[in-house]
Length: 259
Image (cartoon, rainbow, N blue to C red; front, side):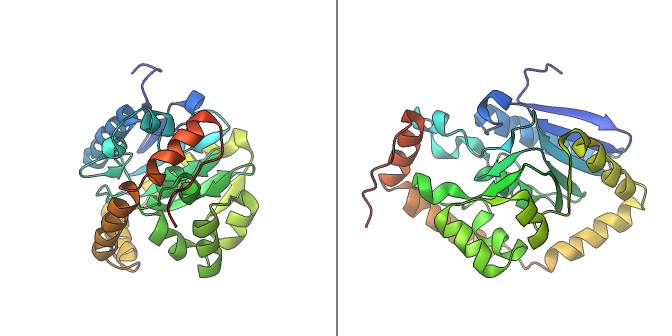
């Protein structure tokens, strides 16, 4: 596979490592990356040799900056960075039975944090940061962030992050339980693969069945996803949803029109 591909996969024994490979764009998800991710997730889930997976980003600055707002500002339809089955990045709502670990190598913001929240747990570097800044762009984190963050963090912390769009540090994320452990940048992939390897050493069926039940403890998301779809329609139909990405792409402060 070419190193120019938007998502790369390498296998390490029974563990698949997927890398979002757009470091010059802070690993933001464009339409091609979403399609590639959806295909790779389906392949990993269908591969009987793979028992666990790790998701990370290329480079040391960003895990994922969310949707490619420059692509959006250029006139791309809002849904082009999603797939019908997988949702944003072909991942956040994808059906996954195997354990997935987020190896957070830098900033995980907007859809990037939603990717982290869609994984089963996370390991991060010490300079990582986490945010849902959608409201600063006239958007809403309806790819799971709005309801998954309050499940992962204390309610007040999550609601403040959602309403202000401000970030928390890796140390705060570790203290609050969003991240399981922190490591130096050079050790991240090795640590994530080591933990994934420990999972892969267990009985695959027992792991899958245990995770299926554990995930259900967080409640059925069908009603939340339906409500999120309605919120997304209302937000995306407003001029603010076009002004936010334009202002970002032009490097200026947005001029909001909503009351």
